[in-house]
Image 1: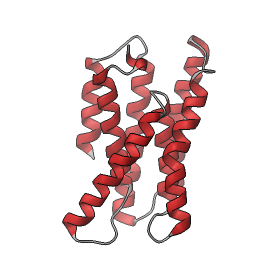
Image 2: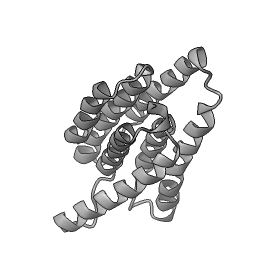
Image 3: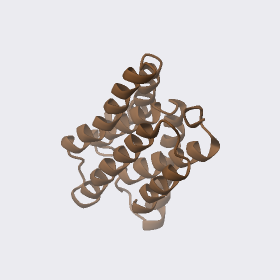
Image 4: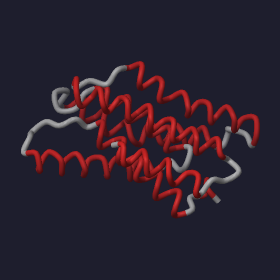
Length: 172
């Protein structure tokens, strides 16, 4: 987890653009979500206060965009990103509440909203990576249940690093 957040934090200054507030906001989201990961690993729950706190940087970035270049274009992407990441998790939770907690659904929505600041389609990729990482951890540890939040945050961080280095439209 710390490696994923550190990779994003190291990549941000190297590719820092004139929209530095976006990068700072995304790193803040990852740091707050990282705190939720620690709680999920130890207590098998994700506190609502950490999920809400991880939404604050995304809202702040949208507020800055309103003042600079208008947030009207960014708002649908933020909503689509949140839905693209949270909806499949919600379906899994409703199908089998014991398999996936509602905290994971809420955290997925917050991370998807942050990814929507870059490109809402990043949320789909992050969910695929998160699912693959979590399944791999379960197989290696030979456990039927593992925390999903670490995979969510690691998948989000990896997608952000790839977006930074691939020159996502936001980072042009």
